[in-house]
Image 1 (tube, helix red, strand yellow):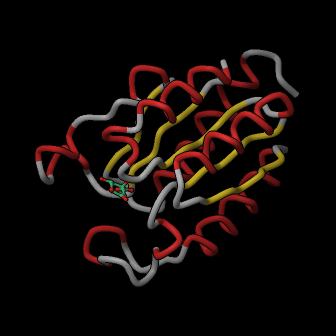
Image 2 (tube, helix red, strand yellow):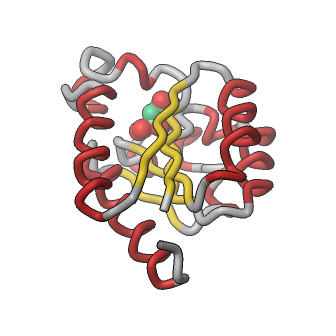
Length: 148
Ligand code: DQA
């Protein structure tokens, strides 16, 4: 079982960027936790971050054929990135969208996700734990579907 973990723009700044919104843990620390949990669950992870919508799309197009599921924090692209939404839909893979902050409790423009309609579900407001929850859910769903 192979799962892609994508992070969009500005998420490379986690740890120092607006810690009151996004917490103090770095992306590298979150990815290390995810990798450890994935090992325990018997899944393989591939992590990727880009500040460019095209970078995320290229990665999905390249890797989706060798993957079983996707976890994506699209950052601000989640609110308007239609090309990224199309790329997520095109993978045909079960996908969980993650936002560290509660996008429904902030500025109005954040309360809408254009990705949400093409994913299995969305986790928002649970901080770094949201990524681990997404991994648990995705592995459970994939096992149910018979993916080893
Ligand atoms: C975010 C929420 C987005 O609105 C914002 O643009 C981000 C981070 C989150 O993880 O809470 O970059 O996706």
